[in-house]
Image (cartoon, rainbow, N blue to C red):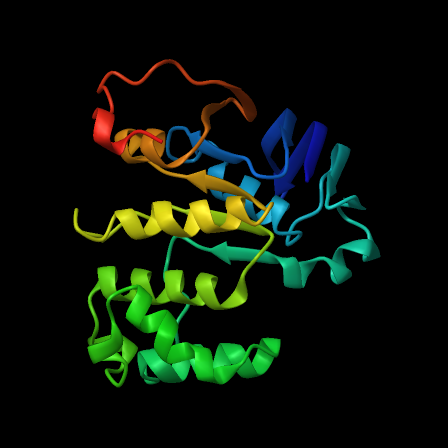
Length: 223
């Protein structure tokens, strides 16, 4: 589903990714850790076809990154960025209904999606009156609605309390169970280990196998 070989990406003429190689197959979830500024968000934007490589070769769903072919695969990709992408004056339900109208998703599914993330009673609350965790859960509801074949998550646990963290795992599991794939960026290594199949470390613009976590994952949380 993802094939990157020797990829380089520059942002405003500054090299960010260098000689990066990554392969992700159907049904697989991959976590990415790394220091601030290491290029994790840039990697997700590349995979979302929002950036083009400056060197190397890359394909997502068989389409060459940086080519016109990417236009046809974008509807199959779901990206949840580091900051919530909601219209602040619209209610949570209105935000999701607007998304449905843009993408052709059945609007009647909005209530079910909000219920699934525990926000059914907050559907009519404006986004700017919601906590970061509620906004994050709304974006997970959007991922449920869009049923992406490739799910890209940037710090999905940010703002979520311990009781809501399992929602991230559930959305990832659903995508992978349908034969899709997920790439998840996070600073929360313990939660990341519990949510994905393998973890990679982004250092000096390239991906490497991550060292074992210093904090063991509880047996009941392990996949």
